[in-house]
Image (cartoon, rainbow, N blue to C red; front, side, top):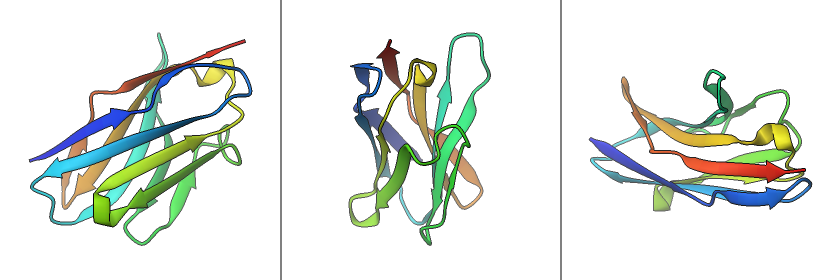
Length: 115
């Protein structure tokens, strides 16, 4: 089993920045892919950004150029740097990792952007 703990969420004004962290622990052998998802009230959960073990990245179109995903394999930690935040970025942000054929989710961290 792999446990994930997210942190870094909070309340920020439009145009501000936040950095989310996701720390993985437990039986970590080889995390293939790490991703950040978000879910706003009344909406489906959506993929925001993901990064592979090789460093390839993928972004939701609406965040590309504003958000940056990264990972520190030595620390088993992933990050999501979020700049130029907008009210529509308000959501609960979740970290997900894939190890072999298993997916693990964190508990989520709230991001609220005020206008």
